[in-house]
Image (cartoon, rainbow, N blue to C red; front, top):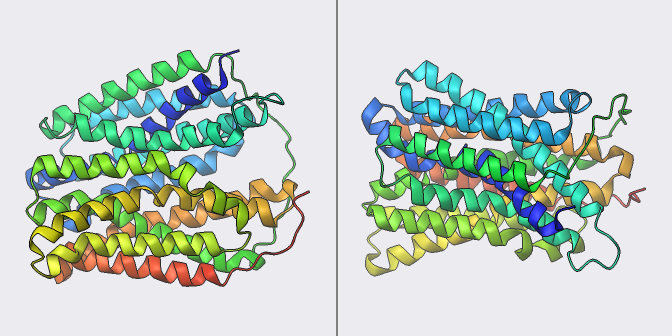
Length: 393
């Protein structure tokens, strides 16, 4: 069997492909595509709306597929399909065709990311007693892979015209998927037909679900438009690349930064704190647009990227921890599915909402203020979520 950290690193490349390359690289490609194709902000946001909708469709299809197909097979199929679809982006100019393509990429991303997470969780659970590798290290490596994909996008995209950049991203995705295949040969999660469904009472988790929905609405506007915002503020290409790389490195570190809080707080406190920090990070990005801050503007922008990157993916982990703390083990899949659907609905609406506000005269600054307000509201809602006191057994 492969060393657990080697297998975890290979799985992390699936996260790099599915989110870092297939979704979040779009922020870097948006400014040149918008200029070349004459997009409004609404159209630009709709591309990520389509991607998020595809991701939701993929997530909803996965339970049935996992009853028939091995999880590793689905993960690799999603990774290689993502690579192929990224390459196709270079050949299309029609808005409708690109919307459909972004949706299909979302479906493939869901297959790669969700099954990769499942395999990482099972790898962590199978660690032998006394192993020097901890479950936290395995899961931290996996989710940190998204940041690796963001950093790779920052290096690959900016020097190239946007059609060539899509092809380069596809090549990186294909290579990463091949490395995932090589490093996970001994991992298996066979189909589980007939797995019983356990009903879940969601009303006691309503405040957390509402707070998480606001997170989905708020965070995705930042991740869609932040590079465009910085370019409109006059930042040069090298500065924007450094900003996005810093954001990606924050994602890599985030799994370890917040792990103690995920174990300590059993109610909505962690979700509330992280939503609040994201609201602050979002406002820091637009502060230079409101007033002439001179030399102070650049540190604020970089603080925004570092803070946002080190927080946003841990919000997803906080809801998983919340479910594990407050529901019986048999109800965990249903609870996590409910949070996934609420989050997906939010990130479907969010990019188009920010784009519509920007088009109606508020500019991207207005859209970011709306995103910050939604994140702050999510913080207040989550703060009302109390621990349920249900033993996870």
